[in-house]
Image (spheres, rainbow, N blue to C red):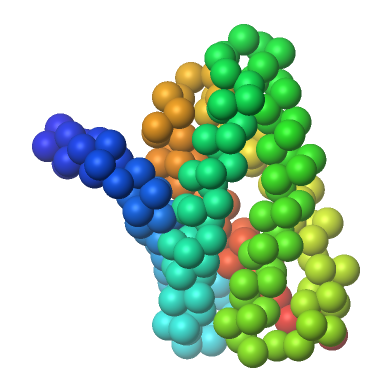
Length: 178
């Protein structure tokens, strides 16, 4: 296990953006597989394309934007003092969280070939739920993240938690809007 951890850290040092993108690909893929195989009880067969959509979102959007956003946040608010941590969590949950939701629903909308009108309906129907659902998970998770996790390991930590949270996102992202 220590060899895998050492290789991960070496890759993170050599290629941080790619490593974080691959970490997010893994988190989103595992989260959707778990959602479809063990949590979802709608009787539908496993949807490989859904998993590909969510995994590719992790790779192309979540890992890359997370790398830059959290790097920016750490550069502007360095340290782990309680007020600094609280400010980072507040910024993450009031600014980044809704932007993330818009990107998530927009990406799925484009991948599924839906219209801008469909996207607008989805945002009106589910963005508030996504943002508020995020608060229950990410306020405590990011309090730990910003207080105790080294900046280089933030996205790995986030993606570890993201696997469970992705079950929620998987259902919400694939919920039909009338």
